Every structure is written in C-alpha cells, then in structure tokens.
Image (cartoon, rainbow, N blue to C red):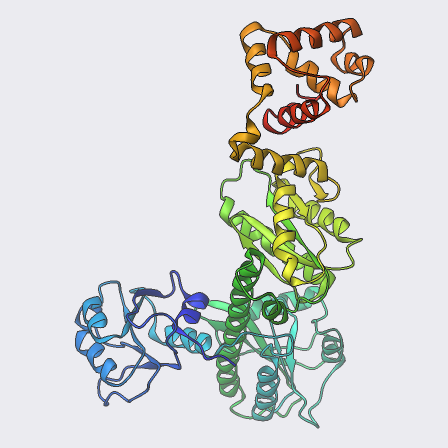
Length: 515
C-alpha cells in the first residue's frame, strides 16, 4: 500500500483549505502525520511529519522552519499567507498555509484524516473501523449502537451480545436504512440542531428510547451515532458518546479522503490510458477493466448557454458515474477538457440505450442538452485510446436531430470528416479542379458545384440529379456541359469524378442537402 505523499494530500484537501507556497523537495515526498507545535517542549524528530505552527505568527515562523528541517520534517503549516517562503526553500522544507481564521484543531483533524487515507478498493471502504467503533461505543455506553450518514443510511452497527434491541433497529439493519416516518423526521431535526447528546423518546409502544449525537467536523454534519437506551446506560454515557462521535468524525473523514484519493488516482490513470500514454495492461488491472470494452463520451451541447460550464461539466460527471455504477458497479469515468469519458464493458448491445438514458437524465437534471458518442468496441484495454478517438469524432458530427450515436451508425460522416482533415493538410490532396469549379461559381453566379454534387450523389443519373436540384433534366445536362468547357473538368474520367466528389464533399462541405 503506497504511503501518502505531499501531492496526495494536496489532491485531497488542497485549494481553499490548504495552500502550497513552496515544495523544494517536490510533491512526491512522504507525509506520515500532522503534529501540533508545542512551544514549551522540544521539537520531536519525526521524519515525514507536517508541523502545524500553533501560536507562531506566519511572518515570524522562520526559526520554526529551520528547526523543522533539522528534525527531518517534511513541511510546516502556518496560518495566513505571509509565511517565510525564502527560509523554507533554503532549508528544503515545504511551506503550506491555511486561512487566518482556521481553527488549529480542525486543521489537525482534517490533515490527519487525509494523511491516514489510502486509495479505497471495493473491499476497503473504512467500514471495518466504523464497526469496531460501534462495538466500542456500545460497550462503553451500555446500549446497542448504530452509526449513520446524513441521509439516514446505516454505515455500521454494534454486535455486543446481550444488549436489548427493538423492531426499528432490526428493520434498519436489514435494509441498512432507517425506516422513514414523520416522527423520525422530527427527531432528526432536533438531533441536528444540537451540539450535545440528545435523549429521544420511543416512537411507538414497542420501541425503546434513544441517546443520539450528531457527528460533525469543521461545522459540516457527517452523520450521527444512535444508542438504544434499554434502561442500563452507563452514568457517563453522554460523555462517552461525545468522544465516540469525535472518533467517528475522524473515521468518516478518513474514509471520504480515501475515496477522493482513489477517485483522483483512478481518474488520472484512466486519462493516461485513453491518451495511450501508460502501460495498458497495468492500468487496466488497476482500474478493473477486463476484456472487450468501448469508450462513451458525454458533453454539454455547445450551442446551449451554460453560465458555469465547468461546474455543470462536473455535475455531468457525477450523473454519468452514478448511472454507470448502477449498471456495472465500480466504474471508470473521467472528465477531460469538458468531455466525460466512461469505459463500458462488453457486450455492447445495451450501450446505446444506457447512453440515451444518461442523456435524458442529465438533460433534466442539468437543464442543458447533452450529447453522447460511443466509439468502437475494442478487444482489450490497449485499444481504448482508439475507441476514445472514435467517440471524439462522433461527437463532432452529432446535432440536435442526432444527440446520441455509435461510430458505426455515423461511419460515413466521420470518415468524410477525417478525410477532410487529412486532405486539408496535404497540398497535393487539396489541389485540383474543384477549386476552379467553386471559383467559377463565385465569379459568375452559377451553380455548377451544386449541380455536380447532386449528380454524383444520384449515381451520375441525370434524372436523379434533376430531381435533387428541382430542375428539368435538360437544365442539369446543360450545366454539366458548360462546366466541362469553362472549368476544364473531364467528367468522362471515373477517377476525376471520384476525386471531385471527395473534394467537394470533404473539403467544400457540400452535399445535396446543403449545396
């Protein structure tokens, strides 16, 4: 299991909460723990630790930085932006800062939880620690205990034998969700308005009363702890519950930090896999991508007015991830340059219906039209970069009438798109009679290019071309004869006809519908 690095820590809690000013040794240095500075005690030798400069003004933290370097610490965290950057760089110590009004105990709790976090796996969610804590609280308080998240989902529960339980607890544990009722809602309202343990009466005659405590960190409600009062709670039950809630806050923050760290690392790895810049088998193993798969790309409609496009794109990522996880379980999704990419495992028969469902749901939730493109199904992860390239091409040919498509459904369009790009980059491929045709039309007000395209698309049938042009076949015949005379085009040469058609369709962007 990898140790936490300074870069990992910044990925999880960086931004407004924690700002990096300098890292002379780089961001790959390990961070082992966060310690509070005690001016009355010698600075301990703790290689890899971050020292929180409690009681030291940022501008006066130079001596502390030097002492931290001598003790082998990774860095120093000051409060406020005016820390001793020069001293930190001179002594090879990272310098970070938190806001002026940040409480040091909250900063310590946040950093400790993030440093202790590790990338979560399907079997490592931090719930084991919560179950152990629930047992410890139950033993100390004297009643069966449950730990919940803010949505009243049961995350862990105690298994201490001999403690009384009621039907409400049994139903909650069976469904891992507290049964909904108006009475329950009122109890939660009272609980989350309190900052100390709350004693709550039984909801029905067959239930038992509860002792409950909200779980908070830095003003954020993370959940709650509930203890059944079977009439034998310990005299210091409330104090024990307060301590238990504080530990629960640390564990919940740590689990969340682990999930965020895993998500960040997974997103970065998937991005590199889709770019073709990492070892595909290794990346696939770490991401859980096995066997045939394809890349689906989702993007906000560029024609729509989106006040905060970046935030809306992040919300689109959440919608895509949620729907994919509901269908396939743990899933690989990433946001790159405004496009959300998801790897969909084969078989691919239902991929388009999933994409259509996501487009519909996202459009309703975000109030912005969304489009989706699906690349080719490839045999393994090594081909996902190609499938992503397919999806990117499909996105470019989608429109209001066709918001979702697979690459096979729009193969002619994307082929012409790529041909246009290749031909436009090469002088010898973009030269030829098509330019003379367009120039003649521009100078003389004729419609020879339009006539040519319609004739080609009608299979060189004069009647079919006339129908597309809504003119008499003789008019069409006359135009083609004049075209050969004035633009020097040989329509009897099948090769020239083919090149003309490609150039007019790909380079000039003409078609029977647009010509």
